[in-house]
Image (tube, rainbow, N blue to C red):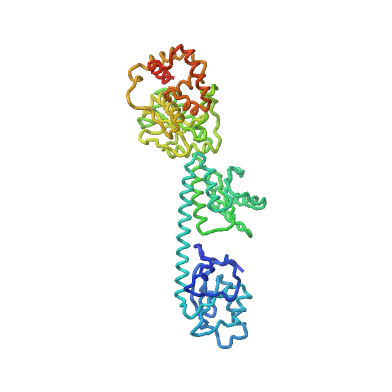
Length: 506
């Protein structure tokens, strides 16, 4: 017997209807499983209601169709079997005016076929039962809409985190109460969240992903499979990526929630975010930040001014910079795929695809018309808006702003726009002066970084120690060594001003 094609709407537990004291319904036959649900209420006095049922209904009858010579039980057996074949969820029999009691042969037939039989008392009209079902369905629909809406909001928030793909999978697994996994173009698992399924279920899920993976006409974009206790689903995301789900059941809103997650993951793993595209973008940004005005201007097109943004994830914010550790910054290599997705999401939030994940710091170029704003999970340093030929100088501004943001634990710090000494001294003279003043620190990057941080925090030992993730005594020792190498009195405000000006030219 085929499964009934019940409507794709939230169902109402039959127990909830029986709990309504105003209806006074009583179950007198059939199973009492609390998991039994109904999708609608329908009244019919047809001897064969099969053609009029869609599945999942509570069928209400007063027994008008029962012939007088129906005591043998054959009529009731055929009647109940047709209701079960049509997918009816339960049968409600109304007492009076036709029958004073429920026919015993009907009770026996319902027990044989496993169909719940409810006795409807004379004082309860069928319209009251139908209205109660409608009210319970409306309440269930509202709850389901709220569940879907909350899931959409949580998935969107997860997609904006620094680790968007794992975050989206975690939220999806939590919302559906199962397993969510992302498979790559080669069929290998990239990330997953939720309860680990049995090996047989895991293998079946991997096989299901192959159905939606091939590209071209006729390839389905989704596929499902159900076992005794697990529902499997696979969604093609494009570029060979597949979202796979294994859940205990399948609620009406689950497909909507999964579809939202599929759209978000498609955006996060699309071709424009692939390794080759990210590499080209990183190469472009590095050229722009280090190229001449003649090289840069044609690449930037018609945009006149730009922000340079330096960003680091908050989990790296409290780590000392390579300069503070006294080590050289590692050469930038191919970023990890999850890092690429995270930085792409950051670029999308700031409104720019020009991203370079270089080591612990991500560099971005943002058109000046799009003002950078704080982004959850990231610490940002933003330069002043500059034309193309001044991008290298703006990169230095962004680096200093990020250093101050990390030191002060601010989500975003902008480079100051008011006029300063930099505007009064020619750039070449300022750099020559800085090299002369800071020459003794040239071979000690950790000392220079410590001095810069200490001056930016107004000589606070504790805050400098926190910013550099070192002990406060280490800060004191480094500053004392700076004073000896520079032969300077660091308590003198004039000396501090001169050193700060020199450090800003580095």
